[in-house]
Length: 248
Ligand SMILES: Nc1nc2c(ncn2[C@@H]2O[C@H](COP(=O)(O)OP(=O)(O)O)[C@@H](O)[C@H]2O)c(=O)[nH]1
Ligand SMILES: [Mg+2]
Image 1 (cartoon, rainbow, N blue to C red):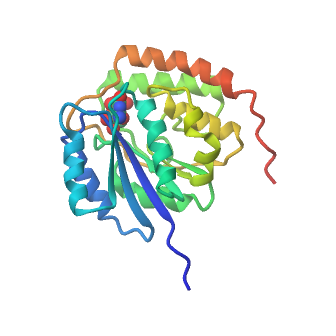
Image 2: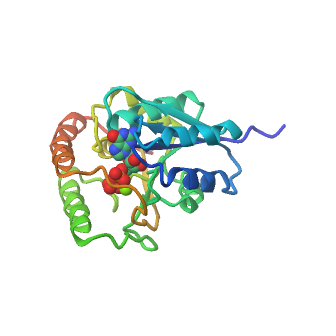
């Protein structure tokens, strides 16, 4: 008997992404994938009714799951709960991506494919074949400075440390242990990557073309950015002492 197909859960944290979420889910569900697919949207009770739109798609397609969080809102809090839930759904592979249309589903097959070689595969704007969006100069400058800062501090041997579009093998997230993470906000992206790296997992990259969000607004305010940089220092202190096991 053929082995059962592996289970892929796509986890999408959302806050006010009602303008893009339906098209995004439809594109994901239409991908020619051989695995058993589930889409998990983790919504912080968005006032624009994002969750209701997802629930409507779920009525016709049980591969779609929606988790509505009503307590404190935050990209990190949603991510932690989403990862836990994805593991609970029996995921062999977990891909996280944004719900604003910046992360294109067409890259999912190549991220998944590269997990043959790596434990974590980042969708990277900054490797050959990748591209960043033509975003406003100020926004690109922020990405550039944040990247520089993180590279200086963390020495993770990858090009796109702040990418939130990436694929994990199940055992990575089990060891990273979502419940133990401390990030409430976007620093979760760095926390998960750095912890996985310090635990000795192999991290690779696959090119992605990042497009600017077409609808809705970014949640990245100056205050959130500042808090993220402060959290980065805490994350370094927390996980630096982990000794990566020697790979043979
Ligand atoms: N559940 C949840 N999702 C969030 C929160 N903040 C941001 N997100 C989602 O995280 C993804 C990236 O956020 P975005 O605002 O696009 O950040 P940017 O791409 O750095 O400008 C999007 O899908 C957002 O809807 C939050 O507080 N809670
Ligand atoms: Mg975005």
